[in-house]
Image (cartoon, rainbow, N blue to C red):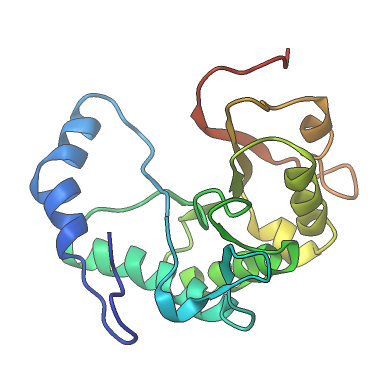
Length: 198
């Protein structure tokens, strides 16, 4: 749904209609759902650029603006509807559709934690990066997060999807912080056939 159809505009109407006004969130909670996770998908046009290979990517320098956008959405949703989100991701499959570099993932995580906190949303957890697969690209991004103490401490969990490359020992070894403390949860936020992984 388009929360920011153009710079400076915030529009919750589509999201509200489908998830709040429809009763979907209320019904899910009534039926036992305890955790609401925001799964952002798609960058506003002003925040993306075409890569040299033809794919789309987050424009360099837009990391803070993107974090502000996510925090604004979460705060506005809570203020207008009373729906409190428990956890947020950063972007659906940022290794695939609209790409984020490892450095951008690190920057967005740190900015997002600050932006949530300044809005009184300290209870909202952050998971990242939510890649399509648990592969070498995910490992590289998790390593970048671990190498930045502020980013690692801002995260509550490492997340990926599980299709043809499911979680493995390689990702499990990366869930412990650089000092062998500060263990992170592993979130599998989409799944299908787990392929050859045990």
